[in-house]
Structures are given as C-alpha cells and as structure tokens.
Amino acid sequence: MIDIQSVTKRYGGKAVVDAVSFSVPEGSIAVLVGTSGSGKTTLLRMINQLVSQDEGAILIGGEDTRGIPGHELRRRIGYAIQGHGLFPHRTVAENIATVPRLLKWERSRIDAKVAELLTLFQLDPALYADRYPHQLSGGQQQRVGVARALAAEPKILLMDEPFGALDPVLRGTAQDELLAIQKRFGTTIVIVTHDINEAFHLGDTIAVMDKGKLLQYGHPIDLLKTPATPFVEGLVGTFDRPFRLLSLGTIASVVEPGDAPGEPIGIDKTQQEALAALMWAGAQVLPVTAEDGAKLGRVRLETLLGQAIRPQ
Amino acid sequence: MKFWPLIPRLILLSLLIAFLVSPESFEFLFKPLVQANAPAIYNQGSLASLTLLHVRMVFFATCAATIVAVALAILVTRPFGAEFLPLARTVVNIGQTFPPVAVLALAVPAMGFGNGPTLVALFLYALLPVFENTMTALTTVPRAISDAAKGNGMTALQTFWQVELPLSLPMIVGGIKISTVIGFGTATIGSTVAAKTLGEVIIAGLNSNNLAFILQGALLVAALAILVFDLLSMLERSLMKWKAA
Ligand SMILES: Nc1ncnc2c1ncn2[C@@H]1O[C@H](COP(=O)(O)OP(=O)(O)OP(=O)(O)O)[C@@H](O)[C@H]1O
Ligand SMILES: [Mg+2]
Image (cartoon, rainbow over all chains, first blue to last red; front, top):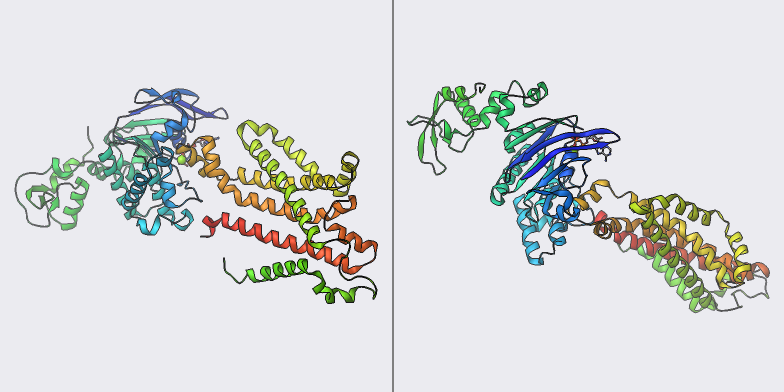
C-alpha cells in the first residue's frame, strides 16, 4: 500500500505537484497519465525519495518514507527511469544485476535472475548478456531498463514511460509480461504513460494529472462514467469511449447458454474483442469456448451493444 | 587495436633505445652538422642517464600533480565542496598563467639551484589540464545515468566509485596526457637552473654552437613525448572499450 497524503513539491516557488493525495492498494497497478510537464515524473520520484516533498507525507506499508535511509528505501523499490538510464560502461547483464549486487546476492542467484529476465523480455542471453547498452536498439535498451528495475523482485515498482520506445507488438507482449509478473509476485506498481490505451489495459486505477493537480483518481470505468473535468473527458476520448468501456470487461459476464455457428471466441477475450469478432464475421451471434476448446455457450451482438451504453 | 598503426611507434622506440645504448653508432648522421674538429655526439655526460633523469622528473611531477588535481576536482564537484569551485579554479589558473621562466626565477632563491625549482614548475603546469578534465568529466556525467544509480539504491559513495569515476577516467587520462607532454618540454628549461634533464644537452649545444648537440637533445625529448603520448592514448582507449566495442 502506497499512501500519498497531500503532497506538494515546489520549484522556484511554483508548485509542480500540488497537494496530491491518493493511495495505491497493495498488489494493484496505478497508472499516472497527463500532459507533458504535469508533474508525473516528479510525483513518481517522491515515492522513492529521489525528490523530497515540500509538504505532505508518503507512507509505504504505513511507514513514512522520510524515516527510511534513501538508499535502503530505493533498494526495496524498483525504478525504471524515463529514458532507461542504463550505465554505458556496464554490460547488459551487469546493468540488470545492479540492485542484487548492492544487496550482496550470491553470484549464482544473480546469474540465474539475469538470464531469467532477459529471456522474459525476449532478449536471448547468449546474444545480449555481454553487450554494452550502446549496442542495443532503443526498444532493447528500454527492456533492459525494466529488467534492471525488476531484478531484486521488489514489492513496489515505479515505472516512468517504460514501453514508450517499443513497437506496438512488443509493447503488447511487454505489457502482458508485466501483468504476469505482477500477478506472480503481487507487486504494487505505479506506472507513468502517455498512452491512454496502455493506461486502460494495465491500470486497476488511473490518476489524471494536469499542471501539478490531480484531476481524478479512480477505476478506469469511473473515468468513463463520470469524468471529473472536460480535460479528463477529452483524455479518455469521446468518440471511442463505448469501445473502451467494452475493453474493461471479459465476455465471461455476457456469455449465455446455447450454441451458434461460426468461429468460436475464447472466454478470456474482452468484450471489445468479441464485438470486433462479431462485426468482422457479420454475425449476430458466435460460440464461446474455454481455453481447452470446450463449448461454454454463445455471445450475442445485441448483448454487447447493450454493454456499451453509458453506465449510470 | 590493429597491429599496423603500432609499427611506426615500434620503430621509433627501437631507434630511441639503440641511440641511447650506443650513440656512437649514429655518429655518421650527425657528423655533417658540426665543424671538423668538434664532437658529433654529446660527450659531457651519459645521454642514457640524462634521459632517465628527465623521464623520472616528469613522472614524479605529473604523478604529484595528478593526485592533487584529481582530489581537488572531486572535492569541488561534491555538493559540500561546490562553494570552493571558483577558488580552486583561480588557484589552478594562476599556476598556468605564470611563465615557466618566472616560476623558476621565483623558486631558485627559495630552493636553490638543482631539481627543486623545476619540479615545482612542472607540478604547477601539470595541475590545470588534469583538474579541468577531471572536473569537466565529473560534471558532464549524464543526469539520467547518475539518477539511475541513485534510483537503484546506490549511496553517494557507490555512485561515485561505480559510475561517475569509471565514466570519467578516459577524460582524466586525457588530461594527464596533456600534462605529461607539456612536462617533457618544460623540463628542458629546468637545465637553466641546473636541473639534471636533457635540457643540459641543448644548452651545451647552444654554448658551444654545436648543432648536433641541440638536435640530439631536442630529438630525444620529442621522441619521449611522442611515445608517452601514444602509451597514454592506448590506456585511454582501453578505458573506453565499452564505447568502441
Ligand atoms: N529539478 C527541477 N528543477 C526545476 N524544475 C523542475 C525540476 N524537475 C521538474 N521540474 C519542472 O516541473 C514540472 C513537472 O516536471 P515532470 O518531469 O514531473 O513532468 P512530467 O509530467 O513527467 O512530464 P513528461 O510527460 O514530459 O515526462 C516541469 O515544468 C518541469 O520543468
Ligand atoms: Mg516525465
């Protein structure tokens, strides 16, 4: 649990983070979105005390962060810095091993962890472990930056636009890897992004910032249902919000008994994906199957359209 | 590094050693430069021992200056030392604006003739390049990199040893390289106040109007400077292998 209590940071008399309060429940993902210069990075860096707030307090698991020596706090919190910040004089493997080495892990454990993370992020250890950062593409550097943040299996992870340099396909895989890791370790994650789709895909909660102020903090569906300001409404998108709404739920909740002809849809798909499949097939109804292919029922176009109506 | 660029240096090194071991073998080269009855090879002492003394003097002065300049640059780039930055800059710059001859002239009354004044002059002249380079290197470590070090839980000391210093080393060696080359030249002037360096050979040549002596002294100093410059350049490159790899 990260508890941000009325935190303010001023630079030259101007509040770049202005009395912001919200809390991130343990094991959940909070996404920070907002315009450039709205204070997202500054807020993120106050959580690990790279920047110290002028007012307010930040509690982690009930403990005030200012009571913990900075370097110890930061070894417990993974941090993927905006623009990767890899050490140019250290190899990929050495970069990833940074925090485990500071924590004096055993050599064999470090090596295993490095190999595991490289593989997870689709970088062949045999090929990449001994390269220097400048020998990687921007997207590869970014993945190494994220791997470094994850290396010591931190309970809390701060990520500043971690996937900005990845192509859409890799970004999708990286997001799914992150979700898998988050599920496995129960990590609490605060992530900054400019990609509103990413925010809706990853976020259990979303915080919208503008000019240092927190405009709204809530579940993705709340942002769609009751946007606090026109700025939030514009950010979540007016013309595609029905589709965004559908993207938040899986078809498990709309599946009904019965059979139907056509290409089946997996039960783990979102309602948005099911709608797309129905529209593309020109069908009113399609069958739904479990992961193992077993028939579970069917989903109707009409039902999905009903789900896309503005919630009350 | 490829092998072939090394060849000219190896030739130069072999020539230098051969000349120091047996200067007489090169007599035929210098004979045409002197009058019939004058000596063609320096005969007022051993060229080899003067060369060693020359190198030793530059080495000690540069080492001492490097230690002081690097320590000073580290201090003034720490948060607690920032206020001394202008002062340190001024002091080091003053060392550089004094002409070498003036430094010698001032040091002789205090220290007497001999190696002392020259060591002081060499030390002062070596300070600035090392100090400037070290300071520039330490202050231009990209913000994102030192941030990442801190953000990953390094203490200030760990950030310095593990990140800032390794990234700055090539540029520090660059400063030492400049200081050393300046030192080889400046040390010759020291012989005007009785320092034991290759300047003796040049001065002897000037006094007896012997072009061969002047040339021998000058060529030896030049060859040393070139070889040491190359050696330090190699060190510089090996410290940057992460960039070139
Ligand atoms: N160390 C600093 N000194 C002075 N001003 C700063 C400092 N760090 C940030 N700022 C200012 O604070 C404001 C917020 O910066 P911040 O980096 O938090 O924005 P951001 O929301 O992360 O933007 P982006 O999306 O472009 O990364 C900006 O106006 C920035 O110029
Ligand atoms: Mg930012």
